[in-house]
Length: 260
Image 1: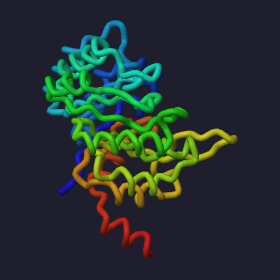
Image 2 (image 1 turned 180 degrees about the vertical axis):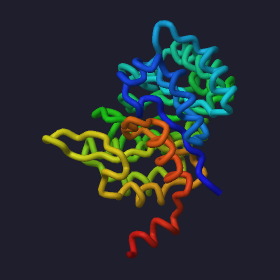
Image 3 (image 1 turned 90 degrees about the vertical axis):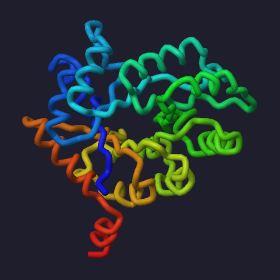
């Protein structure tokens, strides 16, 4: 069974998306690359964008939606304001999104998510929390504590596992994959390199290939989002290349490759 592949609109770069006319303008590229869905980024929405129009564009192309919001579940060591979170879920509902993605924020010692959980139970969209590149949300320890609580209290929250963000804080992605695999519902496939002492995301073919080992440890049925840079004169061709690469990725082929 081939993997479910999502293309993250931000993979084309904010400037390119804007020049093309917004996120709706890249849906044809995504569809023609034989991807299964698109991750819509709130931060890339233009003032002229209408979520219902984007939703129609996704539906007409039979693309699954993921909605990503650059916000956190915890703010000033308290849970996010319910009215704000509800707004995000209403937007996600409009898009008919499978996932709503947030980051963790600064996890307090003690917290009560009962209001949040009551809200989550009113929607079909799954909340996923991503390991980001921040000091508070990019380390294994706070995320491990949070997801232990999620499991213990049976909270309806899953993880969006970004394969490369761990490197920003010198965390080991393989260790993280072992720890979090059972709670991962969505994967951001990404590789990175150090360039001029700065860590940057790179295309898979430009990486050292360790992304394969990490992906092998994660659930095979979790949708994979392409978040590394998709660049070139033919965006459809480069997108289709990586969609095909990931759709056909398997543990067996990766292990045999490594053995050669």
